[in-house]
Image 1 (cartoon, protein in one colour):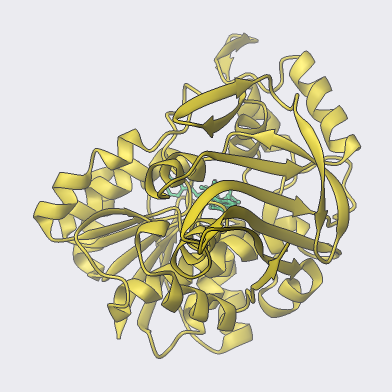
Image 2: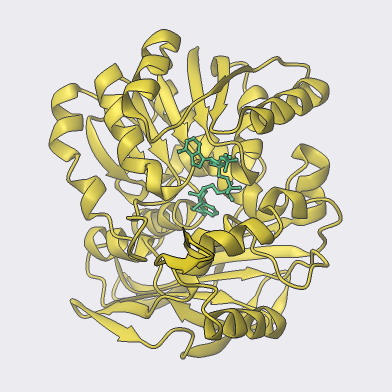
Length: 395
Ligand code: NDP
């Protein structure tokens, strides 16, 4: 029985709070903390009403390391679930080291002024976490997260060598808004407008943003046009999957979404540098974020499904084999259960599952870990029971 501190009260933070509250056997006490106290309190009230469990609440600026370290030293959780923004990752890792607490997140660090996400900044904490005897689990969402564990499962049980991986991510849901993003708009738009990148035979290959596409047949959804993107799990999987020859990531986008994005880009609204406006400096993408719907607010009335998985090809007993391992999640079902849409849900459930792996000792170690470096079996058993069942097909 352990205490857990959740940082971030957005769409994903809401799911993590609900699901952690439902885990009485693993979490003796749950605290939700974020920058805006009113959002924390709204989630806590909903959790109490739906699950009859009272959460502790706190206001914290996670970029203020001394303030956060004090909260950790006072509350003494066993693990922090960081579902704030990637900009906070290093500060939260610093505070965890200072207070002697394990760390988990769902997205890798990005410097605010460059749209570039790489593990190098967080991998650089390896020695500090090791010598402090603490564990940091990186990327415990769906992608990264479950997709990494799917690959580890294929490597452990289905193939002797995994040669080709295509991670395919489809949201075939409809929220009825002209334009909205399913998770933090700023992080989402930075990711999609970046140059595409994939790994082949030891090298990274670049493509223009959204310039390469193909049709995938997604279970539960059907055929959808999918675009090649760079996604952070490619970096760790290219390092950790043995015998790999190529790994790519694909995501679906509707025509209306792409048209809005193109126009916003053309007029400069997706810029991440400061511009002068009426005597003030503003960052256009941050201003755009303030105008767009909050991801959590999309949940009510969202219909349709997400279908996300890994298509893995390789060799088993000298024979060529291909497997598809995936999950389908329904927006309306997740709303019924925890008042969230499926993107927040498919991120929040693996975050809680990762934390359960850590507090039960099913996953243990000292240092910084990516998901595929740990045993996939207990995680996949648990994540299915917690709301994300998965399936394997030979293709
Ligand atoms: P939201 O923007 O909805 O929520 C972010 C929350 O973090 C807000 O409550 C925000 O507070 C809080 N926050 C921001 N800065 C600070 C700070 N300095 N101190 C304390 N709290 C802070 O984002 P989402 O919930 O949609 O996404 C959360 C995370 O999940 C992101 O990192 C995202 O990249 C990741 N993600 C991962 C996925 C995966 O599959 N691996 C998929 C989807 C998302 P405030 O309300 O004051 O702004």
